[in-house]
Structures are given as C-alpha cells and as structure tokens.
Image (cartoon, rainbow over all chains, first blue to last red; front, top):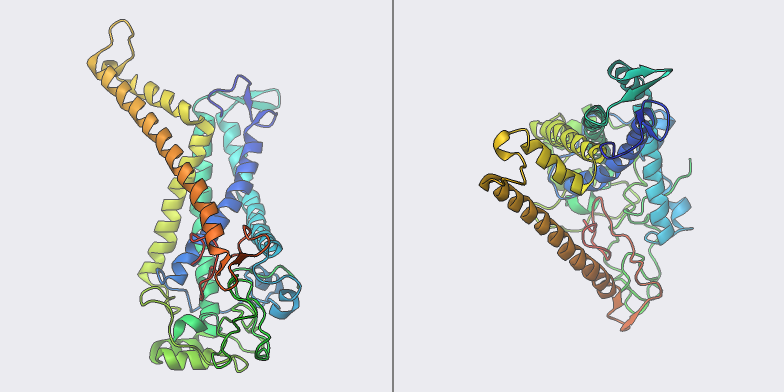
Length: 179
Length: 238
C-alpha cells in the first residue's frame, strides 16, 4: 500500500495519512478479532478444548451485564423473530459488532495518542504535518500497531468468552452436554 | 434492555406443545407437522442464555460454586444447577471428549497458555504480520520484497547480463511458489463455490415431504455455543 504509492505519506493529511490509518486499523482489527475469537473460542469451549473460567462473580453494573450478554429476555424477542431466521442472524451479528466497536473506542483512546506521538518523533516535520519515506516507517508502524493491538485485545476476548461460558455452564447453558 | 437475541442459541422452552400440533423447528427444516416430536422426550434444547440469574437474586459466589464443582458428580451438578422450570437433563448425546469441560475454580495452566500464548502472542504475531503485509503491498509486491531482500547479498544479486546459477534457481523457486499458490487458490475457490451451494441444497431438502422450503438457500444458522446439532453450514455447526 505505502510502498507503491506515488503520493506523499504524511501523518495527518490525506490521502496517505498514518494517523487515519491507525484509527481505521484499530476499528477494523477490533471487529475482525472479535468475530474470529467469537467463533474460535466458543468452538473450543463447546468441544471441550479449553475449560471455562468458573471463579469470577457476575458483574452487577447494568452496562457490564449488557456487554457480557447476561440479561437477555428469551421470551420477549424470540417470538417476533424466530431463532434461525435471516434477520435473526443479522441482529446477532450487529449485537456482536456493537461490542467490538466499544472495544475499538477503548483501543483508540488508549493507543491512538501514543501512536501519533511516536510518529511525530520519527517523521520529518513539514509545516504542521510530518512526512515519511515510503519504506520502512509506515510498514514497521503498522507491524507494531497491529501486533500490540492483537497482543492486548485477543487475550481479553478469549478470557471474555471463557468467563462467560463459566457463568453459563454454572447455571444451565450446558444442561444438554453435562449429563 | 432489549437487544438482539443470540441466534446460536435455541429458543426458550415454552409450555409443552399439545400433541399433534408441533410446529416446524426453525433449526431443523426437515421437521414438519407430520412428524411431531415425541411428547415423552423432554425438550432440552433450552434457551441457554435466558436463565442466567441476576446476582441480586442468586449470586454465583466462588464459595458456593467451588464445592459443587470439586465434589459433586456430573449428575448432582446438573440437578443443582438446573432451574426448577426446566425439565431434567437428557442422557448424553455428545461424544466423549467433544463436550464442554467444567468451569474451573482457579486459572489452570492450560487456560493461561490458551489466553496468553495461543491467543496472546500468537494473535499478536499474526495481526502484526497481516498489518505489515497490508502496509507493504499486495501479493506481487511480496515477490519484489523477496527479490530486494536477496539482492542484499551479492551472490544473489540480479544481473541480467551474467545470470548466475543461484539466481536462476531462486527465480525458478519463486516462480514455482507463485504458480502453486495461484493454482491452489484457484482449486480451493472452485471447491468452495461448488461445495457450499451443494451443501445448502442438500441439507434443506425435506426428506419427509420430498420438497424444498422457500428460500432454502438461506439455511438457518446452526447452534454455535453449546448443545445441539442442526442444519446449516458445517464449518459453523459446532
């Protein structure tokens, strides 16, 4: 992407903006990681590849309980959209992506400032903006940013599903598989 | 707070349906009104999420959880953890070794490995690599990257007037690599785009009525988390 572009690479100005790239990377990677972990970790949990975490207490805060899928009224909305319809899939996906976006906002708040700060130190100051060569700063920046994001987010997502499965199995979700 | 129900989970068990008026199950397109479920068999496809109690009414404390987890057999555990409105658990349908493990009372070494090594360092390296590749360029830029990398070493340096044996060997190896990757992607995409439609058509054929339902290609989503099988794409039917 940056190696072959004929346009200048700068920190803030379009078209090749590293600060904007960092923001987009955080949002997209949060969503992609969330969805991948949703499938992978729950697959491992369902097959017994990893044990759920069973020693944590459920949160009492309403927002936290919403985030962890804890207060769901099964009868209220199950009737209007039957389990397994296309709209049901879409709404489920939306409910997952919304949580991934919440994580993306947190990641942005934590990581975007330091990322831009480090880039200002690396780039060449040019009238309020910073210029970069085509190699290797943008590439290494993306490498480090993606690596740090993955290193921070993915364990949290995996632990999220392990903890949630622990609560679920301790109540009745595993009723069919237990006996 | 209202929000979209999780379609990976089965709907909540209502009152037992009157015999002979069973409705088709959304996750099983083969179920029609002509084959009602046996009334004697309890419906254990419960809405797995609906019955997680609030902490105010029945808090899940480690002090209460641990003795149950550590001392009780699976049968007593299930009985204790089953809310009173639910029917008793059905005998095992899941194969041994393919069912969820019990929640652990403390963080085990395997969980630490799973969370921080497999999903931590592994995911970090993978994400970093993907981001680097996106920033560097696309597939054929990777080729030029390899060439430029090898051109750091004089013996591999490209010299059209005097092509060395090593350079030719490397060039052939890269060409072979690219060719095989391209053909692999071609073959896999062909397999994918034939297998998926065939699978959807195959699984949505009603063996009882010998017919397809309308919109059969929109197969119902399979349960993902715990419990039952069902139709849908096999990669997601867990």
